[in-house]
Image 1: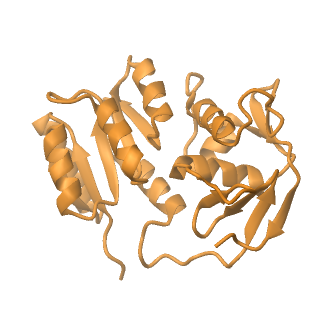
Image 2: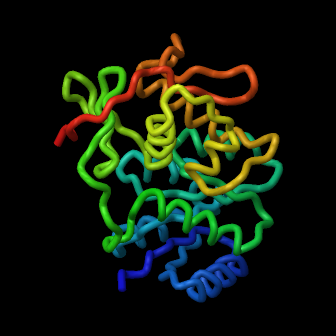
Image 3: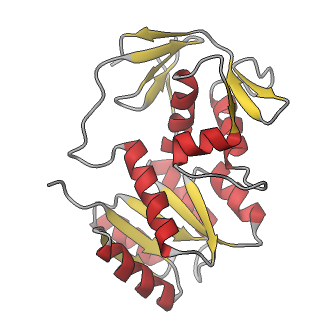
Length: 241
């Protein structure tokens, strides 16, 4: 059996921490709890954390600042916990590199579903099988599903988060096909969206910027009926390793 994923819950609400710690343990996860940003950093230094559940509102530091800081040095998946009305925080969090968000109050079963979807797509388990050796060639880039990396023609590696790579891979596996926001959410995050869910739009915007497509939008085209399309020709290639 593989080692259980180690989840770090960062929230200053003792009741929420206690509930999540008990429930996540019952679901087979290892769980650590931190009630502020300093305690979060200590846990990250001392343990091999698989995924962070991070509240936006903390007593000592902003959860958004902690998200930014963690993303600058690590690709550990991050799920933000936000107040239902704070849409701006959710959007900013996704722009800073969070993989998903959940609005308070929430059902712990929903959180577990989000965690498992992220762990499946990022293949964080040390026992998970690696894909066979192939890569995608598109628009001068090589995307390698095994290492989840993208390399430009000049050899420069494009720094993508796990959520960004999952979205790119969804497009690469379906070149030329128009994909709706709900389809993309289901493919990349294992969930359906709501009319106000902008997470896919944020990820597409970040991908365009990192792939030098922000202005021309020739690579990822916006479709009038609410979706996106990869316009580049895609071929299989040898991984750039």
